[in-house]
Every structure is written in structure tokens, then in C-alpha cells.
Length: 148
Image 1 (cartoon, rainbow, N blue to C red):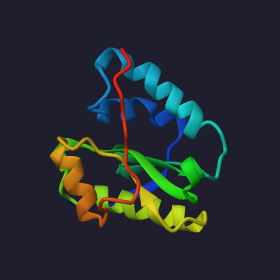
Image 2 (cartoon, helix red, strand yellow):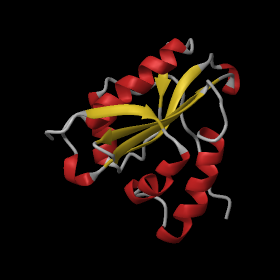
Image 3 (cartoon, rainbow, N blue to C red):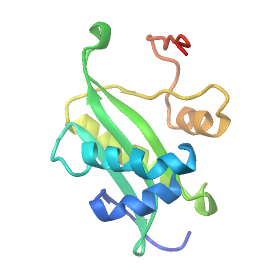
């Protein structure tokens, strides 16, 4: 990647670019899902919610979303990262790392000392990325039950 990457807060006009980068939501559900996320993280001024985009030229090439969360079953406040995407044609150029480092710095400025995320154990790409960023199994376990 030859162009300079800048990382900034997401703005409302980034919505379409974020939708195009998302690989996880079913195609028909993307606009409604991302509109709700933008309402919660972009259109409201909250210091404990972070939605960052990586931009190359005038093009959004990645994003990361997180927030400060506190007190789930007695845990102290920590940073949670719950979404990350980088344009597939420029992966492995360090953009994901830059996004993660920036959100980590902002979470630290917000007063937390731990960053958490949750990854599907079969998602080797995302799991490998976060392990490369220094994340490892924490002291809390995710538990689930099918209720359909």
C-alpha cells in the first residue's frame, strides 16, 4: 500500500463504505443493521463509544468499533472491540494493526487498562489477527444456549 493511511472518527457519510466492507451480516440485513450501529456510535456524541475508520485518499478502507463496558458480573470497566474489517485487497498492509492500536490508545485515555473481544473459534483469520495484537484467553468465559 503506497498511499498514506489516516485514522479518524467515523461520520454519517461513511455508512455506505462500511456496509460494503462488512462480510458478516447477511446482504439484505446490512443497511438496517449498520444504520442502527451508526445511530448508536456515530450520530451520538459519546466518549465511551468509538467508531474509527481508516482512510486512504478519500476512500474508507477499514473500520473498527468498540466501547468502554463495565460491571458485567462484577468485572471492572474495560474496552470491548466488537467489529473490525479491512478491505480484502489491501489486507496484510498493517491497516488492521493501526486501527487496533488507535482504538486501544483511545480506550486507555478513557481510563481502561484491558481490551476484550469475542471471536468465533472457527474464524481463523480474525482469531489470528487478535492473537497477533497480543490478545489471549481472558479470565471470563462466554457461555451460550440455543433458545429457538
